Length: 257
Image 1 (tube, one colour):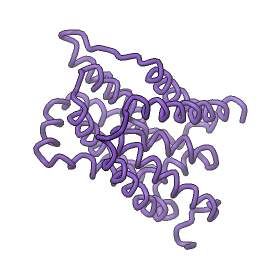
Image 2 (cartoon, one colour; image 1 turned 120 degrees about the vertical axis):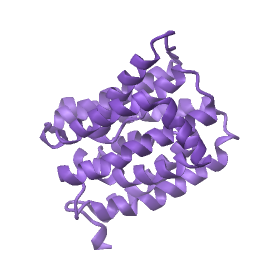
Image 3 (spheres, one colour; image 1 turned 180 degrees about the horizontal axis):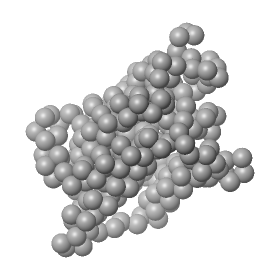
C-alpha cells in the first residue's frame, strides 16, 4: 500500500479520498458534472491544495472519457463542432494558468478556488438561469471557455462556466451531459501533460491519482444507472448545498489560515 502514498499522505486520508472519489463520480454520473469541484473542496480541507489537485487529475480524465463517449463518437463530434469557440479559448487559458499554479500563495489559492465554487453553487440554488442574447453566442462561448480554462489550469475545476453556458443555450439534458463530457475530456487531455510539466503530477502523486480512477469510474457508472430516475431538481439542490458548504470552507481557510 505504501507505493500509493505521496509524502505526508496517511492511510486514513487515502480511505477518505476513495470515498470522496466515488461520491464525486456518482454526482458526475447523475448530473453530468461536479467531480473536480467536490474532490478539490473535500480533499483541500485536509491536504495541501496542490496535492489535492494532483489527486483529482487522472480521475477527472477517466470519468470524462466514459461520459464523453456514452452516446458514441457521433455525439462527441457534434459537441466539438457546436462549441469549438469555447474550446479554443479554454485551451489557451488552461495552458497558461496551469503553469502559474505552483507560484500562487496558499491563502490566495484557497480563495481562488472557494469563491467561484461557492458563487456557482449559490446561483444554482436560487435557480438563476441566464440566457444568451441573440447574436452574442460567439462572445459568450469565448468568455465561458476563457474562465473555465483559467480555473481548470489552476485547480482542475472547469465545470461552472461550461454548465452556465450550456444551460443558457437551453441545451437538451442528454446532449448537455455529452457536451460537458467532451469539453471536459479535451481539457483533461491538456491538463495531464501541463501538470506533468508543472511538477504537480509527479512520481509521488501519480500512483494515488491513478488509483482513485477506480472508485471515481465506479461511482460514475452508478450515477448513470440512476440518472433518468432521479428527481433532478431536488438532487441538484442537495448537491449544491454540499458544494456551497465545501466552498465556504475553502474561503475560510484562505482568510483565516
